[in-house]
Image (cartoon, rainbow, N blue to C red; front, side, top):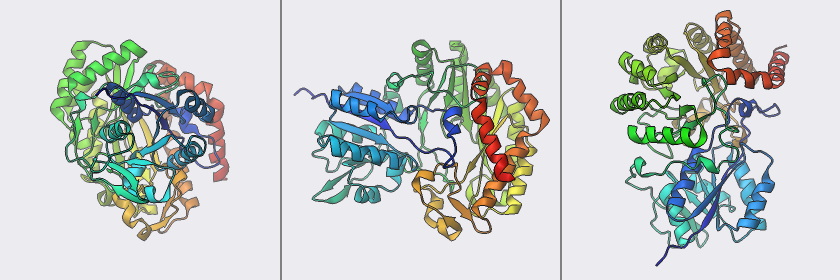
Length: 480
């Protein structure tokens, strides 16, 4: 019997992604493609179905495009992937669909639903089906059965006689090399309307790639609801073939590997570097790593194969606080690895956060002194957010005040305030941290080198200078 072709519109909803009431600078600095939806789209199409994508984050205020698609294309399903901050917008769109297109079934997946699945399905009747964990097989099962006969299908949530049914997750996970390349072409305006983080690449256009899933570590601030504590990855040949495809089809010149543990499997990365250098694609790339999974020889190979920058998750420069929240909390080892990265001729970006449970005035001062002592090329400071599904979430109210307003849970608002602080005090420390970091003459001089190292970034900076300056003035006004 021939498989019936079904159609789905996949939606990436809009998260607030900035301080409430202020201009969304995050969208100017970086618009990341929804790679998960691109992968799902190519997956269901490889099985004989049709998928399209609407990205509300890249194109805010374009709900009319969704309506036009639903009227003209008549899909059987609309699927949403949601973070905590984007979930309310997805519910808003789903409610509109159920009111105006009642025959269309809605499917929700992503990290937020995976973290609190039964609660979501009980409280939001706009959702017909939920997908927990990896989406490929559950989504395909829902589409091919038209929402029927889902009993026992791993990772699927649905209602039976008004009661929520939660099927267990799959015990086995498939080979990532069997997946088709993500359908970037289904993103309107790709790649030009999806710029990488400013000053984080040498040449445009660029894009992000995910070459692995999962993480073995269990840090307090990370949610592992989707992939669990496993680690699977694409082979070096698959990675290079994908880069070759991106260059040929979209003229991509720089790739950001958006993996949690890019260097975890050393042999994979070593082989990838050797084969990429031999392929001579004339492409550059960034990657993220844990400091304990890099060494001098590997850094040399990264540089030779075109790596431009390595990002390290450091979190805090206070050793006592770090040991409470992160495994392998050795700040001197991290300092050493940062020097190794710079000596290899690579840029290094430090990723920190403020407001962790147990944060104090002393820990913030220690962290600032540590950051200022490092030869970082770039720096990012997130506002700690206790996401549902993270170990910290379960006991967070024991350590301070928590405003669980999902729209604001985006690492850009202090929704959690540790004991001993007010929100205004934390915001003041946050502004001071950035001011102290960026006012150093040597750092400012290093950004001038970006005129020839990353000319596109400077063009974007000049083009959006008024917006950047407005944010700076707003910060200065709050300090006054």
